[in-house]
Amino acid sequence: MATIVISFGVPADGFRALYEKGHTIHIPPAGVRFTREEMLKLLPDADAVLACTAFPREFVAAGKKLKLIVCYGAGYDSIDVSAATEYGIPVVNIPDTVTAATAELAITHMMSLARRIRELDTLVRTMDPGELFVMGRRMGTLLQGATLGIVGMGRIGGKVADFGRLMGMRVLYTARTPKPERDCLGDLHVDLETLMKESDFISLHCPHTPETHGMISRDMIALMKPSAFLINTARGPVLDENALIDALREKRIAGAALDVYTGEPRVNPAFFELRNVQLTPHSGSNTLATRNQMAEAASEQMLAVFERMPLKNLLNPEVLR
Image (cartoon, rainbow, N blue to C red; front, side):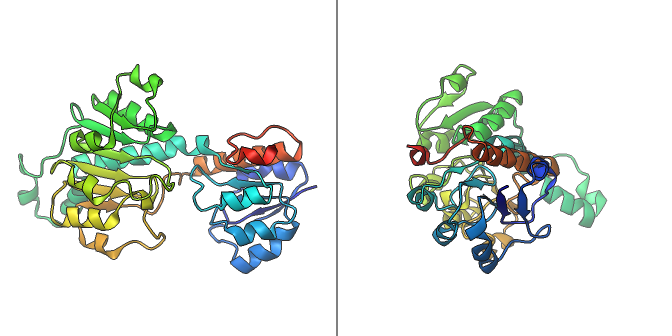
């Protein structure tokens, strides 16, 4: 039987298939992560690991028996894939499981920004009703007829684009190459500069890679309309946070919503002083149903490698050559 290490205490119902096969699972209590020392102690005997937290080179090197590293989600920038490749260890992710939940959060942020939900909720609790319940004040933005810009038209970006079209929005998108399946729906492939200039809502859904690092730069933010909103549920480092803070502080754009941050879990405290930004703590996949689906998908990948079956979403296929 195999030994499996799960680096964080995630919802565990989805690991039922592993338990039923008699495999040994090391998982910390709910909401707790294994320390570096605990990981280094457990990894030498592990056959597979579910990396819910950062998985650097020293962890890869400690996994003398590792047959598989599963990324707990879609983004794998916190896993040293190149080190795993050197050691001949396959790395997979489970992107399908997080698509719906992350898209829903991006959509929620977009709608909340458009209708000023955060601001209005505060005012209902604190402001004199006679001053608040007055027509024509604190008006929101209508999605219908607005332009939605999707930066990174993958699984999640496609879901958000579908919602935008359902609401009567014009959809622009950037991607390395045009997507015929999106073009036939009426979505328009454009360069990043055009998207930043023309969009009323810009939603980021690209992975964090050397190519995308800082791509939403000060110059790109300067192209945005004064009435435009920016939403980031992708990865913090694809965005120049200091440039965004300056634009929000000077009200050169209407607002922003962030679920991910550079240097998280630390959040730049400058954001806390701004009323035109709403913040969530990397919650894209944080629903119980999604977490259990993620555990099930990770279990399927582990069982596949133990039973010598093909892997899905292999990030370093060269290890199989």
